[in-house]
Amino acid sequence: MNAADIGYRFRNGEVGNVADHPTAPFPAPILVNDRGEGFFPHAFCAGEVMLMPVCRGLAMGWAAAPEVGGALLSIFAGNPDAPTDESVATLLSRDGLRALIADLQSIDRQLGEG
Image (cartoon, rainbow, N blue to C red; front, top):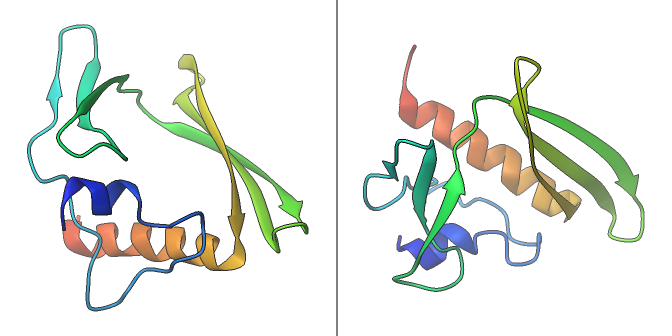
């Protein structure tokens, strides 16, 4: 799986995780600078990187989104002891939500017992 496949996994929230293709880790190590920013593969431009803050922890909220048959999901980076203004919101269909859950479960399985 290449970087473009990793970034564009849900294809607008409609494609689910495929059991025989576990969610792959990034193809190369993520470099983090002394300011706590990481160089991540660009989700949509193969070969390019994005500099993003690496936050510890997250909070999540959601609302039903009947217009897409799913949910409006918001993920906030940080924690109460180190809050940030970094966040993302997305509309996910039920299939997209299930794909996200399957991806997280795949990552958990690959990390093993711990």
